[in-house]
Length: 366
Image 1 (cartoon, rainbow, N blue to C red):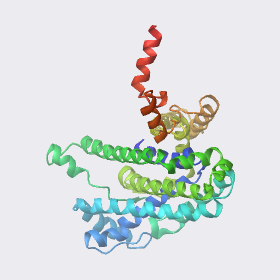
Image 2 (image 1 turned 30 degrees about the horizontal axis):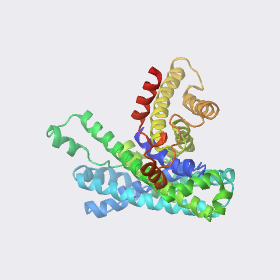
Image 3 (image 1 turned 30 degrees about the vertical axis):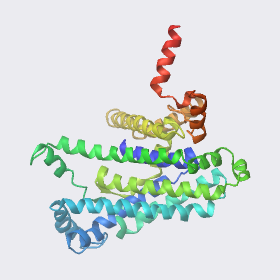
Image 4 (image 1 turned 180 degrees about the vertical axis):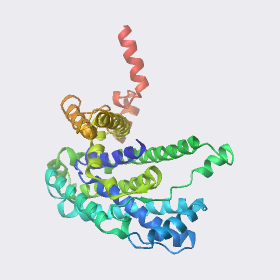
């Protein structure tokens, strides 16, 4: 759920703030995975291990990579962290550049045409990753050196830490990244940039009348969202999956993340995280139930049950709870702070949730 929450926050910037239906989100995530594969196999050995890199798709690749490079990574924990940091930075930058490349020609289009253009771009990236073997080995899965969390666990529990502790630290690291994403985007939401994106989303004509460049605002939202998605792709490949395959970045990831945003609350960053946890849980339950139906009862469509759940969740959210589980919050602008200082009264939306609960209890008792 942590990695999907990272993606949901990046989608919320594009769709929740700027109104861009990015149906190509899987492509920008795939860029992070592709960069992780290139760094781990070709660049990392040279920079961090003093070895010659190995190019996927060649005859000698698996012998050199599995027999020499991966064991060297296992003996050098700092090298694995170097691979991760370099992959995250470069993956985010390249994903942002691709966001410019894919969005700039179509940024003036209406939302539906822009969504189709981004969906086709994602399909193009997937085809390239499957056919160009030197990137990530084509259709064969490639094992990647995960950042070494065992050394952190060893510092806590001794030389032979339990595996469960290592996995807890790994999961905690991902959620630390989620918190970092959340703090960054919450700060941006209350800034003039965040308010500009909202007016572009709500009324393009009014935004242009106020002198806002609608095309540039959309492009800026795509750059930030793509950069964050590229980092999430590197985290997904190196920390979560610890392997990479082009089929890990099919369009169903895009629609799964969109479902998270719609269920959690469009425009609400915390809602994106909550939606990510809810949909990830339902996805796992749907997958387990579908697999059981397929294996025990011979139901042919059992393996696709989780996709059916996505569709039903989107329809239910749109018809019965369009604002999501956590509705979008009003922006706390400096003008409201002046209002509070002058009048001494605090608007309801600026009050904490606990203050609202206490007031509702007092009113109900009265």
